Length: 301
Image 1: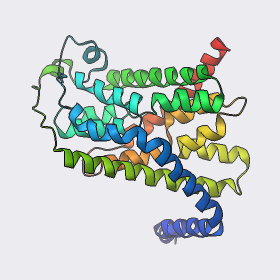
Image 2: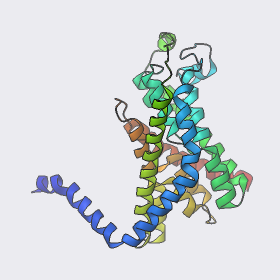
Image 3: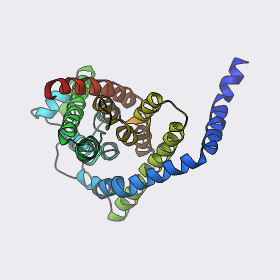
């Protein structure tokens, strides 16, 4: 009996969710429209040009192995791993994951290295955090600067912890030669960028609609928690205007939410890379982010 229930549980959950969405069809439509509007006005213009260019960034002369390089020595990763971290922080997700995938496909990273990079390189962009959350939602750019500084520090801390936990012998860190990376044709890069942009838009629209439905019957505190776990944009929009909203924003930004996790999974489709490790460390990142944001407020307030 128990086995039968567990086997059919996903079906009943999907049925219940479908019924709930139909019950609140008006809120669902409003939420989807808001998500699509956000994608068209802010997300796609921010990521699409860089999604086109990102495969060509892999052809930059960044030696993947260098014993004397600071990044390689500290984080026990190829020097080329600087690229997904930089792109993730400047351009925002899911480009950090896309550049990691492209680098792995080109042979710049091993499977273990690529999965480790995914734990800290896929982040909200500086424009979203400093301007969107700090200036526009909080009305104080310093708050955005604090959040972005926390985001960067958390990423580096996670990268350092993972480097200490890795079992790769240090002597092997410079063993592999520099692979030859062939840039794709522009038409292929354009198709991949369009696919990535539409995938991101789809997830944002879905989670925006789902949160709009949940907002109609959940208590405020429960809705804010659901937003922080599901969609970072909706979470920051709801949390940032609150008097004590900066600390939970720190969690939402560093964790990034289920929507971004699924966007990342879509970026990894067709590879043998797993997201399980990254998801665990994003939870750790969220906890660290909220704690460090609280500490920064004590210093700067």
